[in-house]
Image (cartoon, rainbow, N blue to C red; front, top):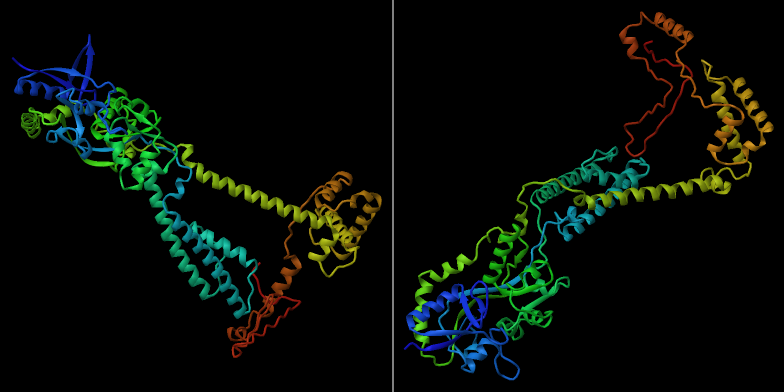
Length: 568
């Protein structure tokens, strides 16, 4: 007669599936197959019972054990299927078979996705590189400013708006744009060459890395280790109830593991039962890889997408798992022999493999989820550069408005105008003179439209008299200091529209006749005679003494008649 044994079992997908109907508990899955082999080869009948708390077993504060380990300790069952993680604490109350499987414990979280990063255009270089590059820009600009000013002082030259030109040159060279200004002397040009090469290398590297990042984007993985888990506050985590992982983390010497146990938000039954909650991003769980792969298989088979992610760093590596027997069980030796056969023959691995399918896609890194290939960039990918552009435009408008206020104040306050723009004019009557000149210029433009030649002195005096007459007739024209207001009132009240002075040729018939007479007069002059002549065209003539290196004498001369022969 075959003995009737009580066997403890609880559901743990994919290892064990437990169903109960009319008070009868049945077991299926890989461990259900192992139980059938045990019953057949060791010749016993069995009854499956479930633990009252549905737990595997952990030591309680009073020294007793919960779950199936507690049932074995109290010898309520002959053995428990499990499989159980073999620990020294559990070995004090139960006996384990040889390891049926080695497994890792890791973190199961919601899968990171491809997201647009506002600061993505800064990611080609680290923060340290950007800081050093900014310091290089400042150092190059300052050095160029000092070097150019020193060269100007040595050679007796002057560069207007040197600071602005130097800053514009540094930025334009960096962005590979042509600059209208470059230093005049060798020292500054050597600096130009150095900065040009450095900018070329930097910008080429930046554009290449940025192109590669846009082509194959990187996915930011916020949690990829236990240290990442405890360092963040966005996603809570839980531990498996009754699992050895809780005691392992609490009693570890590693402060990160102790922190993971202390800061957990609670417990959950197992990763299979909580797979949907983890996929929804409600919390992260620490459990075995076999169960996590089964959850991934279910997720991809049901939805066609991957919503779960297993961290690369393991919480516990190569944990041995076996079947637990009560102390000094007579069935343990036969069980070890059977486990050895089914494990090394590959039968158990095949049973597990049949439970886990469609996981290859979800086990790939999250950056490989873009299966449609290169896709078009959306507006979110350019939020960072557009923000910088808008900030630059806003700064430009603020700067222009600031200059407009300063410029307007100069014309509103005659003291500011006379002190800054014309310090030699201290009298209060100078500003009205400026207004009169503008009126005269406005009328002159209108009156000289039909003139073919520049106005004579008499014409100018007559127009000035017209200006005075207009002022007497319309005293309100000079009430304001704004040029635009003067122009509008001249056009409205005096009907003087804007005109540009007609362009007339400076070479008149009389000038042509003089030049022809000059050519006829000297047409027989030989080449040797012409070589002894000096020509100039009413422009500044500089004569330098080449024997004086330190002092340069400049002589300016003008003549009233041009001796330069031009072709008409």
